[in-house]
Amino acid sequence: MTNETYTLSGAAAEAYEATFVPALFREWAERLVRFAGVAADGSVLDVACGTGIVARTAADRLDARHRVAGLDANPAMLAVARRIRPVLEWVEGEAEALPFPDASFDLVLSQAGLMFFRDRVTALREMGRVGGAVAIQVPGRLSRSAGYHALADVVGRHAGAAAADLFGAYFAVGEPAGLRALCTDAGLHVDAFETWYGATRLDSVETLVEVELLPLADAIDEVTRRRIVDDCRVALAPYIAEDQTVAAPIEVHLVRARAAR
Image (cartoon, rainbow, N blue to C red; front, side, top):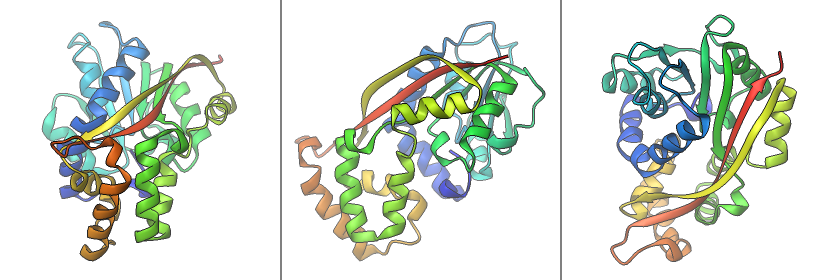
């Protein structure tokens, strides 16, 4: 993820990698890489790479001679990525102005980043410029993501507009027609569009709230956080197992496209 909407400190970036990646984004990365058709003889750029799970997953499928790069605007995320897989290429930069020549990569991937870009059409156009093919994965519709719909309602009631806006941002490109239109406006031809349903799986409601509110961690006091957790235990009851683990359902879209050259 990138830009100021999802900027994390070093400690928060480490927490993101330790909790959010195994809870959700590792499974997403495996699906994205498979959907995109990452091959052993290609080169890959991961845009809005965060702590690098997509780039790492792609690299595991590629011949070691081929280029794998990850780009993100958040230096704290990149520091974690470099620590985990130093042999890969990690670049600080903006999705709207990718610092690579035309056709530098066979494939450009982006996971859970498009909704945070300041100019989504320009970012998609840039991906098409530097890559032979583009594959993106984003959260779908909040209304069809039952766990997150319940979570957003509770958080919004207790933490106010900033928290509500954060959850709105997560699902900002979740309407299928709007997502296709963004690709078309960027000069991309959509080859494939797939919707699937997953879940964020964590050891407790407390951990789910902590992870989802990482960008607002310094703005929510302890009393408010406890109220959110207590109400989430009720609102998310259908998704809480006997051992108190939680699996919050979420809709996800995958898009594969090529630039119309």
